[in-house]
Image (cartoon, rainbow, N blue to C red; front, side, top):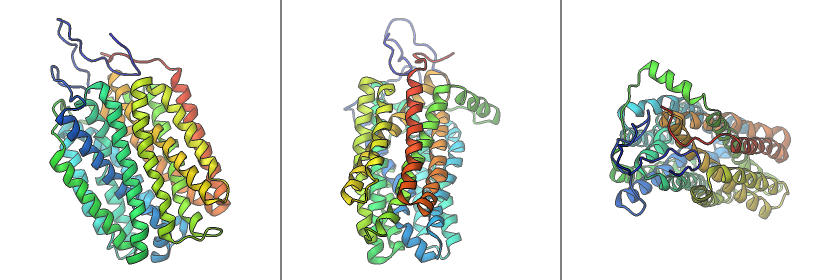
Length: 431
């Protein structure tokens, strides 16, 4: 029997019957979709599209912060609330969405989450007041939680083990493309027709991605429903926070996402003011570096399949920190290069960590969806709280303040990945 990085051992093909499935596992006797199969292609394409929609809808306001500040008459720091209220609501809703999916199923929640979120995103484009706009963005944060809460758990249940890290990397790559397109498209559209039509365009992209998911995502074959009662949920929650590796992975998500969002919240203000003075459309081109995030997550997933997550995660954190330091000079090529390297490094860390959580949880007898929800709760708390801190750091200390803040956060995430390397590997589910 082969042992790898925190993976649950697959049932043996020997004569004896396989061991009973743990609390969150596959139905006994069923085999996951293998790479190259039609089911594998449908799953990866659908969740890639879902990842695009998720990040495009969530982060569609980030490139528009200067326009929103001017349009609604709020400060630059307050304009970041258009993003932070969404991610804060998302973080809280994730704690409910994961356990809910354990009862109603993965695919049903994913489809409903995307469909309702697209409607709310379109409505926000026509909000008459700042408070209404924030309210709609907050509601969208709640509804969109159904997808990220269960995506990695769905992949763990439906795919063969050796295909999981790569598939998670592709899903996170969809997040990166969504983040890029959502930010990149809004700048030029806002410059031509205003920020409202920019948000309509992003909602249209979300609608196309939702259609792909509705048509293409296969129903769960290996999902086993569990009671969503209060006592079982609390019991699973205690187990999900009882493993030091899971706790460290949650913290990696919080620190890494906080650092990443803080940088991107502030970069628009840096590029549209002296010494650069770029227009909103030109400044939004910096979000093209999100393509490096897609590459980073996909490559990171494949390297994790080959060399193990413990070896790859620290390298991603180091890469992100190096890229951040490259942005310090007031030279546009250095800033773009640094943002690209930082983005690639961050998505290596996030892709590896987010795929690691359900595998580690399954090996320890913890509900995968609940552990994934806790990871993403921490991730989006980092986005909403620490990401907003980036706007304040820029207001008080300029770009050097943003680099200092995010540098400390990336360094903390990197140190945690090194700590995890020294913890025991789990190679079988606990009974």
